[in-house]
Length: 164
Image (cartoon, rainbow, N blue to C red; front, side):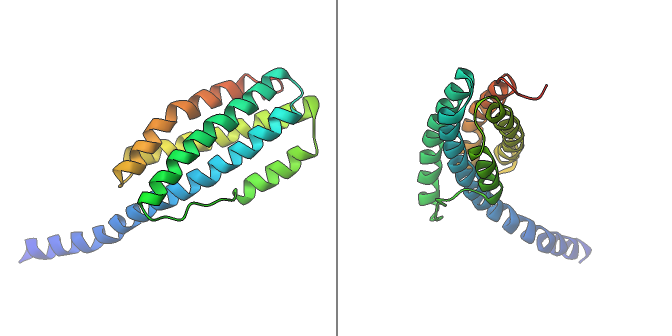
């Protein structure tokens, strides 16, 4: 009887955790798509407002890479019957508004700092999903996109004006 009670208690405690994991893959996918949308917009902004060729080129690459990744994420969202967001997160809207008022070296400095911070957060989020995700398609997407995110972080850290 004691074993049955322990097993039942374990199942009851595990069920909310399992449900939470199921939601977390969906939440991850939504956040990843929104974040990707932001990277596309911020990359396009950098391509036109960057003070250095390195920042402008990075912006073009960032926008292109995240467009491709976003298309793949939206395909998986459609398979999972998740409505893919078309907007960007509030924090990214604030960053974009701030950057739109800048150009040249000042833009480069703020953009580089924002890209470093954002990609560090993204790498942590994607690593967590790649390791602990409950949907193999979402887990695979996170795993596949990690090298590009790490490359973006490395490049952002080397941009003119980047914090040292």
